[in-house]
Length: 253
Length: 194
Image 1 (tube, helix red, strand yellow):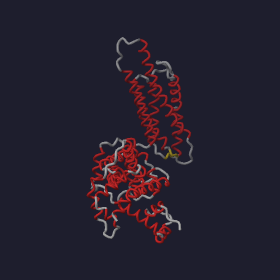
Image 2: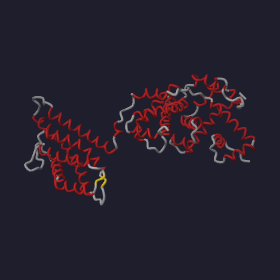
Image 3: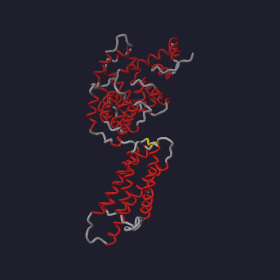
Image 4: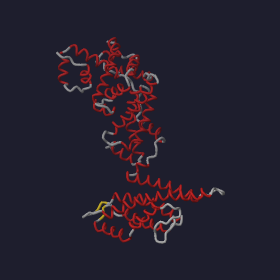
């Protein structure tokens, strides 16, 4: 007769022995296994008596009071994933903007070297141009996707809407900076872009085919995509601190 | 009917701290029991409860509903306890015996039905609790965890393996080794009391 192994007896004790009736039958017939199983039961029953200090029903509330003030803020969880990216981009843009404005308006110490005073505005402008260039590329992508979208029935534009909504606040910051620094042409393009983005964000997420067509006409008619492309290209290529942005008559940032 | 954990988790993930409070209130006692059995010390168990819930809150965004919230939280609490037990073992500290609750041991044993097997009745002495604590302290951190989850928490081997994040076979062997060690340590005591 094959005896039950200790592992089988342990599984039997916990009700996880695959052949429970077989094990039970064997224990009825085999004194040696019965003795071993009895010993196992006694030991585990004694282990069961290990006490655990009791906690009152109000314990959970007590724990909450202790940890509540240690919980980190969870504002990220309020936002769906695409908005988190938009918020992250906005935070980065804001940082660049603050750096730019601080550099632009913070009084320069008298007597600083001519080279330094010439290089600083260039550096500041460079930082802003990088941010604006990146921003224009993202805006352009959203508009191109909408302009090229094809659908026989209503078109789901919820993804583009989320991205457009994320871009609006960023746009405002750049537009205000451009206006503040006297760059009227850039501010004008950004203002137009902002209007388009606001309209897209406020459309129903399922857009009827006719409305999609109207939007396409508007994007073509207003030439906003073209203006963004020109502005983007000029921003990208701009090396001189007082260079032209590419609009007729040229303008400074 | 009370809303499920899943409902509260979904709300907590959107920043609803009230929902997380309700989860804390619902699970704290069971986490404490688990932590106490894992660490063998009341203060450590309290620390584990708090640390586990804070970790859970921070990781809530990563909870993917593949397991129940309870199992997920148990996994976090188990890891917190394991960290603590391992750190103690590294420092060569012994886990505290459950002497603070010895009176309760006696009560628990006294409350056993008279028709129960005789060794349990022999456990009238508080010494038994100390012996059991000492035997539990001889288990490795993984063995202790697997044993606590299977024996005290009533989890099936499959579930134990999920909490320990290992293969079911590995969890089973941890339980086997734990029971074998406990049997070797406590059998003489139990036999003497018969």
